[in-house]
Length: 290
Image (cartoon, rainbow, N blue to C red; front, side, top):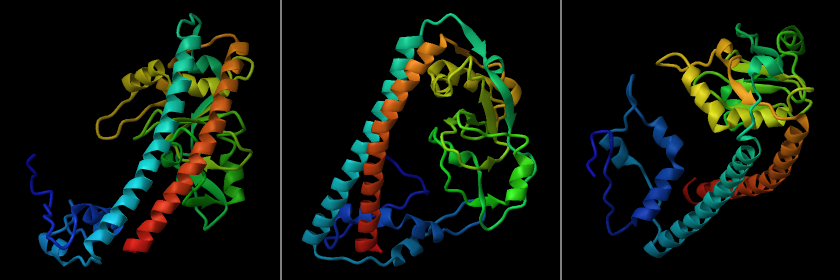
């Protein structure tokens, strides 16, 4: 391959093995980013790279450290692959059960409320009720590790627009659009306008089923066709209302939802193992390169 000026080519001397240097640099990503200079595009100069200090043990120790990181990284990749396989299993089951359903309805037909988060930036507080952004749902699950918070008073005012309950669905609409997440916890939170809010009609549609229906290839294709904009892709509420999904009998939806919930239990166990492995990886980075 040929590299342009955006790369720095490091050729290791006899004192250091390239695998060890790779893991050192990987562990210093944040530090390296902080060294970038420039207004429009940050760049790390050759001089800055040359001056970075690195602890260099003997070559045998370098090889041992490299093998440790490769082993832990391989375990992380296996766990991630297992999670992906379970997601693929749910998608395959959805197609198997509902791929030929003739009854198709729009999101507007099966949801009693279709709106989005507040359009005015609320007054934030140091702590309180989490205020979520698109980044909190890009995994198709809601994460509450918020950086912004609002007061109870602000929550009571904004809640009128989005009366969130267990079983409701939030959907990202800007940037990383098309990611749905089901509200599964009785926990207060609110969100920005780049997240749509859907309240499924329980007598018509099961929220867990609808979550998978939105993630299906057909619905995602519709979403891709409906987004507007060039620099920042946006899925408008008017377009969300026209997305169609198959609507089988509620009993079949609930049967599928039970399958998804069982799969989620397996995903939970794997995710916990993945989190522990990632913590181990981080601690090893700190131990050897901190």
